[in-house]
Amino acid sequence: MSQANYHAPMAPANSSSTTAFDIDKLRVKPGEKVDLSKVDTRSTPSWDGDDKDEGKARLVDLNGKMEQLQELLWANGKERVLLVLQAMDAGGKDGTVRHVFEGVNPSGVRVASFKKPSSKELSHDYLWRIHRQVPGDGELVIFNRSHYEDVLIVRVEELVPQSRWSKRYDHIVNFEQMLADEGTTIVKIFLHISKSEQQERLQARLDEPEKNWKFDAGDLGPRAKWDDYQKAFEELLQKTSTKDAPWFIVPADRKWYRNIAVSEIMIQTLRGLNMSYPEADFNPADIVIPD
Image (cartoon, rainbow, N blue to C red; front, side):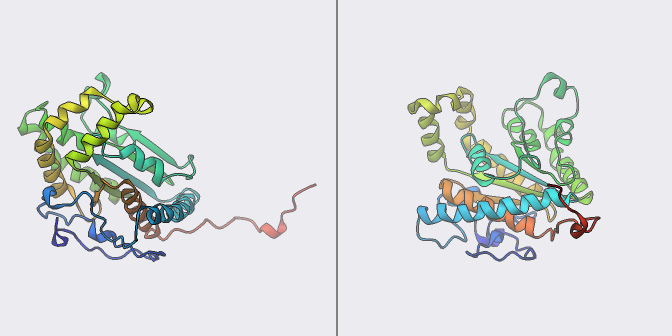
């Protein structure tokens, strides 16, 4: 995707860092046509480092910043943050969560994974199970897959008619706008990998015994419909990236870059909330800790 397809929002307050990273290069402009074939999945937009080792060193610094900001989010207890992660199978969602949020306070961070709906979930509208997992005050919630499965797998696998799933883009935009209006900060990230990279990662799950547990033969079905899924992703990115609930496309073949990019997006977003620690309702100088 050319940079013309990205929206340059107002820079978040206090967003400076040791290495300047322009997250706007990854942000999808609302309503802009998206062509994933033009996004180089091995590219490293906004990263001017020399190599992988330098990237890994940078991530250590970013982990420290993430830990501090998440602690502030939890202590402040007023803001709500939702991160939505979507990708093709083996796209790196679990690895992203593991590496980007290493060291954060588990009291204030929660991961919600959305797999095949249960019979109870299917007895409600498709957003019912989603709404139950959104963050409360002080929480950072990560959606590993999300409500977007209902315009992805449901569409490509023809689980419901087009007359039904095609209405869901508007449903989702309105749902997310309601969350934003009620105080939730929403960030949505599409981890974009190539078909060849997916092949390598799936093969590794067969070749390396310690990764066998990750392999699911069911992942081969969507792979056979790669082009259909890419088209479905393109449409949802185009139709549901909004000012208050933006999508970011992160080239994700290089895992170290993926981790840096997602960390930068989240850190700059959290800094933009302009949070502060709550003031004590007592004078600490008056308190004496007994021996």
